[in-house]
Length: 269
Ligand SMILES: Nc1ncnc2c1ncn2[C@@H]1O[C@H](COP(=O)(O)OP(=O)(O)OP(=O)(O)O)[C@@H](O)[C@H]1O
Image (cartoon, rainbow, N blue to C red; front, side, top):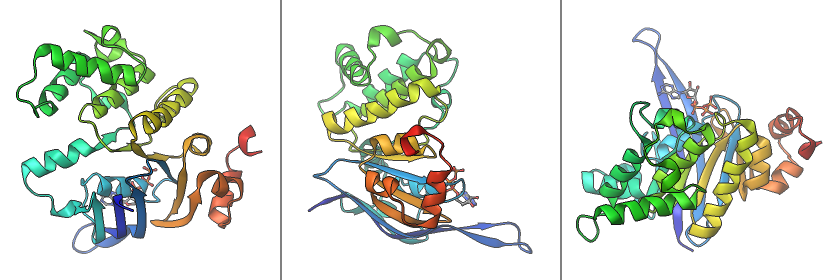
């Protein structure tokens, strides 16, 4: 068994305040978690605000370094990646999907420019790509997310719906052919009626492209529907983990039970 991601006894402590009022916050405490190369999956991370979900995501993305333990991607300690070239290679393989797609794009810039620029940056394996090759790659990733280049070409962010813009952001993340997406609350800013379609897209990307996705959410309904595995976090710790349906159908930890009881959807009634 080879591991795509190996989160090995990871912890993160932040120091806050000035000299006289310094206090430390253990945002993440000793979490271990693995994703296998051979088994692409959607792993949901749920928990109340402040439970450490985003800090865990930031460590997987290499944006924060753990204060304890290690995050290994494809066997390499993310903290050891230093050179610009290694950093770019890592970022190609582990791509973030942000909460608010409107923050991912400058409102004054046409969205296709981002896609073309990203493709030009990453399609360098066989020398400088031609315009046609770039457009073909951009069209391919847009089709992968249910759009086409013709629909997106020349549009500014405000000329697309929130759902279309989030799909475009996901398409952009697919350009470097990543193996892991880290999606932090990716549907919370999307219209409720479109949430399921984005979540379904994650399932399709897992199945078609063999992508693994870490799906951070407050939304137990979509997590129940799409995840293979789930971890429930509270105060920096994993209080429950396992197969998503098993955990959510029959939660064992009092916090997981409370979390489920707080969701008034027919799925969980
Ligand atoms: N850069 C930072 N400096 C200091 N404290 C931080 C920093 N980032 C996060 N924290 C603290 O770490 C704890 C966990 O925060 P984190 O954002 O990871 O939680 P979360 O579960 O993602 O919350 P939310 O769902 O609201 O995004 C919180 O107490 C937060 O205030």
